[in-house]
Amino acid sequence: MRIAVASFSHETCTFCPKPTTVEDFEAGGVLYGRDVLESARGIPNYINGFIKAAEESPGVDLVGILSASRSRGGSSGSWLTEECFDKYSRGIAEGLRSAGKLDGVLLALHGAMAASGYMKPEAEIVRRARAAVGNVPIMVTLDLHANEDHELVEAADAVFILKTYPHVDSEEVGYEAARCMIRSVKGAIRPVMAIRKPGIITPSVYQGTEENPAREIMERARMWEREEPNCVNVSVAFGFAYADVPDAGATVIVTTDEDRMLAESIAQDMSDYIWSLREPFAGKRLPKTREGVAETIRLAGEGKTPVILADHSDRTGDSTWVLRELIDQGATGFCVATIADETVIRRIKETSRKGGEVTVSVGGHADCYSGDPVEVSGKVEYLDECSYTLTGPMSRGDRRKLGLTAMIGFGKDNHVIITPTLHQVLDDALFKAVGLNIKKLSIAAIKSRVHFRAYFNKTAGSIVVVDAPGLGPADLTQLEYNNIPKGLYPLSEKR
Image (cartoon, rainbow, N blue to C red):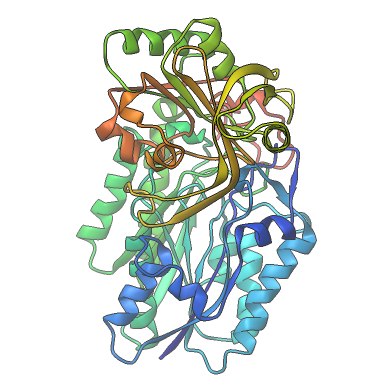
């Protein structure tokens, strides 16, 4: 049994100013052939889950095709250019055609990709793969933030979506998808799917599955999987509110073994349940910048350190609102990780060196939500090509390469780490890489929504999430949508 494996993944914030290009994906690294599998081996991701399932099944061979999933700057990139989408989606299709006889295809996608010229990009990826391989099973894994509709369900044979945020079940979901594939090829099951769109849209920061109502929704999905023998999988995507696309909003996809009525029944139940929780799901409140920083300083003063101060709304990486407020309110012993400013890093390299003194204006350049540049005068504490290996629950063992990175120390034990692009902190590995001990900091200000909690919920002294200005706001009415469906709660009270 030969099963092809490919990945083309991007979470696209369409409100960001810079399109995502071929060059962005190539800078992040695009893999082909065996490298698709070997680069994932031992790392808890979808493809390692595919590998584990295959290794448990004698006679199953995985065939690596293509993996394009690390665009430079991540979700700080806006719409993929048509050239970019075509290069990798067609690259998958061409790789499948040249791979010889295949019995199935496993695609690790995201679900929140937005591409110029293709309003349903993941469905189009599957359709192009289908044209290449014909009538063999194609199964898809998706992120919990996926925006999808009937077009993907019509194109694929089964869809499996993460149930955790922070995403700590990627390997488990990949394993489940591969097991379903193997059983389908052997004729042991015949998957059928049903889909519903509950009609709600929620900001990412409210979707963490360690808190209600997100936790309750996923528990109900697991309940159906336990209690119905013919239920293969109940998947819920909460959606990605920062992609202005026609299939935005939450999605329920249910897969059963040749029981369409059961799939429809469970999908409707899950959709109704999510709708019943719409008010607590969308109606939370977070402190604004000044209020959140003041609370952070208070907690630090009480010794509840390190306080993790998370800016959830910065999607370009260069926002200075939190840095400015920390300085203005007299905070000490803090580190801001990170501010994205490649121009400043180059200036530091040209005019100074590690240990030297510099004065630079950092950040505040990408758009009107970034704030103003902040002048920082101090010592260059780090200036090097930065890379590190993640050690926390999120993607443990994965190697992150940031490129030329700088850190400036200033004031009373304050630090700002400057990276070329948006960088989301997942654990303490970045701090170690630049020579900081996070346990000795009073405050660590990071750019993250929920993923940081997988590590810091157990290691931080306290946590404050602040609703600073940005392109990923908690209040979705701040955004100007043109393509999303009408009637999505809470943007409209009507279902």
